[in-house]
Image (cartoon, rainbow, N blue to C red; front, side, top):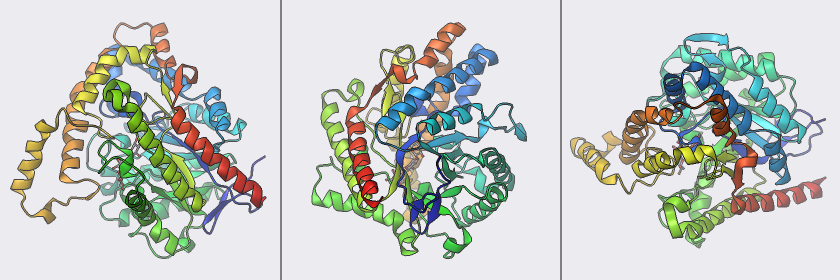
Length: 483
Ligand SMILES: O[C@@H]1[C@@H](O)[C@H](O[C@@H]2CO[C@@H](O[C@@H]3CO[C@@H](O)[C@H](O)[C@H]3O)[C@H](O)[C@H]2O)OC[C@H]1O
């Protein structure tokens, strides 16, 4: 039997006080579907509404339920365990539990899929961390917080905050005795322009969870997409006991928009190291426990990147390996993004010959050409269309300071235009087209489409999995030495 994990100083430890290093991946795209992970445009609530409009509520409900059933099952957990990994961070969308038109009422059976996956993981000796990836109103302006705009409404409406506190109380009540849950991650990638709202939220959520579940550890993301702790109070060690802090350490070298191809030069390694150290410096100065809750490159695909694919991916595996080397030196717990998708970032990905990918082949090409997903997108075919908007803003607002809108510099003017114009506006017009692909399908056909996401119908990204396994082995060796 496992024991509840807890945070002691800089370490995560088990019931006997032995250090535990969590190494694993994020289960994104499942209970929080995302555009590039599952292949739709826009965000999850939009495609759910559109599918109901296209094929009716009942059939849409059937498809999404089957999708949830197949996306992660025992075969996934067994495979994950076989790689030497021990923790899955599960991204959950608040909308599964509570309807915004019927707030503060739990939906019937809302824990069923989550219970099943926590159990399937536990049976393989895999810890889980529950990550609230979306908050009512949106905790950041990204597609992944599933609210459809770039303004993070959570920070300006107290009622949204009250609802999330209520929901966490319900979740914690439900899982309070589950020892295989390593802890709760109350909010993914907050982006609170004032910082103070986040601190108040953490005060409140900690008190609410601890009132019903005093044993589970909490994992608090830094502000501004889990990169900035400078607005946190100095007394967090005493104010927030049994808490670890999440950085998200995406390296610029892992993406198509890299400053230059990663060649493992001393300068590049120094830059990679510096960016990682910068995110954790505030925590290190105070002796706090750091967890890297998201990181990892995206990969080239033959269908889009042609002959350059292998070379690009070798470089990306090197980025991955060099990041892991840094983490290993610090005995850092980490959770790579992403376990499963349709072939951009995941450790396993839906095979091209499956019904789902076959059905959406042309649509996916169109999405790629229009660069409607902002995550790792290559905008070469549409840059000419958006540059004039960027230039117009720069000319109209000549004072650079005035263009530094939060979350600058993560969002430059270019990035803001990309997110709003491509990922929200153009995407919005493509949502119905995605849904219309399902028109006229029988339940049996819908079931087959959903089955495309089954482990048995996926390929494995072997280069990535090998790097992870090699590092997991090193960690296991160190753990054995300590024991
Ligand atoms: O659901 C995930 C989501 O959590 C993730 O969000 C992005 C993470 O990276 C953010 O940008 C980074 C900020 O820090 C800098 O140091 C890095 O260089 C940037 O890459 C980005 O704004 C978030 O949207 O993205 C993937 C989703 O699937």
